[in-house]
Length: 132
Image 1 (cartoon, rainbow, N blue to C red):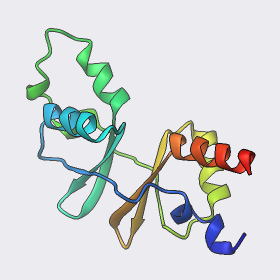
Image 2 (image 1 turned 90 degrees about the horizontal axis):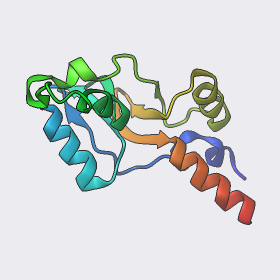
Image 3 (image 1 turned 180 degrees about the horizontal axis):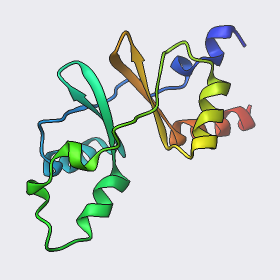
Image 4 (image 1 turned 90 degrees about the vertical axis):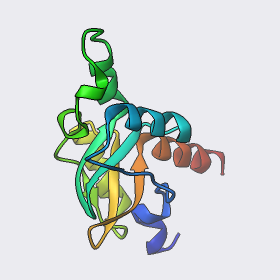
């Protein structure tokens, strides 16, 4: 195993979808369903400003009197996402996700989203390691 194999870039999902903060929550829900994802980095132009998760949406969708089109993405997102560089050591990312009970880490290079690492990614790679 090389040092590059021990960084988050070796394990992240590269084809990441992000949503601009000006979009609506129904648009975010559609994106998640169309792409089979549970986490959307939120951007303001090219700047990462938050993370919207399926859980965030679910908390709001249980209120029938609430019109989802009236709630903005910034109102529903976490405004303190866990963002790491592609060369961040995998062990540190995993420890922080465990300690902070996080479901994902946004991977950014020079402020630009280049990937996302989720608990599902971690489980997938653990399964592969155990099988080999």
